[in-house]
Length: 174
Ligand SMILES: Cc1cc2nc3c(=O)[nH]c(=O)nc-3n(C[C@H](O)[C@H](O)[C@H](O)COP(=O)(O)O)c2cc1C
Image (cartoon, rainbow, N blue to C red; front, side):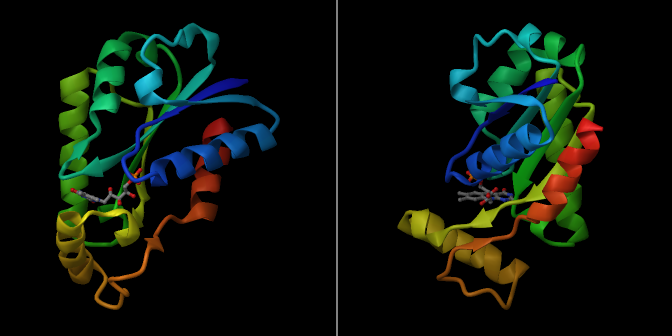
């Protein structure tokens, strides 16, 4: 099986997730191609049996590279098995309001692009103050203090459940 893994990222964590997913697909005996969504505009999806798209949420929206790609390839994507990995800090917690917001962001994305993935997984992302500018660090410290009162607000932290992600990929590959 040949799988395209295409991702958008701002701070790099979704790239790390996409790489891990690509390795997992190889390890299961398949072929996988890893592409940044910004470079994937003219990719021929007919070359692949399945597609995984991965993108983070920033300020309540997915990255433009994802929405542009999903809109322009909506018909081809609808004709093949697809998995969407939605990466956020909201998915690191159990706050019901946060999860409702994740559902709403996904609904708006599907409506705007015309692409409804076969399967969607909400993946917990990372908190990376070492990469943020001063303004972003200020905002993110407040968000994280609210979400994870025990967190060290000065330290980078990876909230992704890597074994859980591997199980999702194994299951989806069938
Ligand atoms: C400026 C900024 C805004 C963010 N906005 C949200 C948000 O609205 N909802 C959320 O759940 N996570 C939010 N996050 C957390 C990111 O989704 C998380 O850090 C993710 O791992 C970033 O992925 P990336 O490294 O691939 O860019 C935000 C992070 C930053 C830095």
